[in-house]
Length: 395
Image (tube, rainbow, N blue to C red; front, side, top):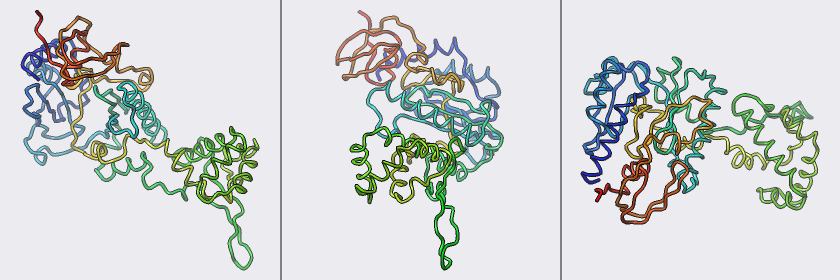
């Protein structure tokens, strides 16, 4: 980034912060703050403020590219070492980033749509399975490729890293035991041998993974029922250890409306004898219900780290120029980051494109070749912040 570009971005960010306020978290004075400036000098952290006014004055004078606050609460948030800060607790936070999606689409807009779907899925877990009230949940578009969720329920504040990892394990289905989701009802048989009388699982709409397992079985059954016999048999025989005879038998059973109702009620008797189906259902249908964007080593530390810094809602993302936008749970569904998180206007700005680049914003698609061009201000800020364009002086 050259001096002209850096000064241009600083001037636009300053204009924004002079007119807008940050959506500061509760207990602002108990949190550590960190800032990255446009001079690439690294993060300035271990900052603390006594109130909104002091924080606003600092931001308007320094004009940072990125603004962060701690998820944690401290007795001495401005102390120079973590030990000296005296940790008191921390919000439970989740960072859902499109970079962590498996098989993420190439289009920026499609990636954002996919990660929003995962965010809505996670919120479903948090409200239904964990019982968090909506008033204790804050959601924000990250300004980049995803969303942040903050849980401020008093029950989670003192959870340690291990407990927070257990929450992640539940959400991602790690260690899920199929035998805990389905169970056999047995009676004593001849010579003391147990014989299976019935096979059961949790009924539909049950809380937790039991209910989701039922949903996955129903989805699988409906998929088979929608096929003609030839197609269904081809699909079923691809499952390990299911031959044509067993596949035809299974297909004839699953076509009965009563069987589908039995499955919804938790009765799996019609699936007995085709045990290989369980692994298939887990690997395909149930896997769709895991919060996949939380898996892996890249993002789990955000939730497990009780001293993590996270972007402040209302600030600007220095890598995009988008607003880190606070959202309500009800407003998330209709939120369009490429429209609603854009804060700059449409005045034309001359640029020098450093490398070919494609993007979309405010309903317009840009396919830019290397060289000089002119784009609206909101697109110019994005391109300069992304490092694919430099400001060009007007002739």
